[in-house]
Amino acid sequence: MKKQMINILLVEDNHADARSIQECLLEVEHTAYNFTHAERFSDVKNLLDGHNFDAMLLDLTLPDSHGIETINLAVQAVPHLPIIALTGVNDNGRLFGKR
Image (cartoon, rainbow, N blue to C red):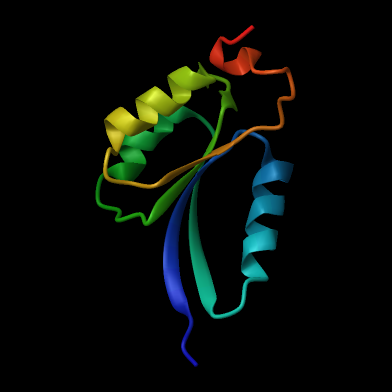
């Protein structure tokens, strides 16, 4: 059976986390993933030119963007693209301004 190819834009500044995410997804049967990796949100606009992505995996703590600002920037850049937020922050909602 031929594997379905899914093109993922992975926006993650931590190389170990990026590698771990890729390795986990490569274990999924019947699906193949093509990853394009960006370490900063500012790199995303250049990567969108000429590429067709099926989804974006988006770290919420990047060197040039943080929290809900990152999601807002992503939605503005690619409103049609599914965005999956990634975060290791456990701070009772302060990432999004809740108290």
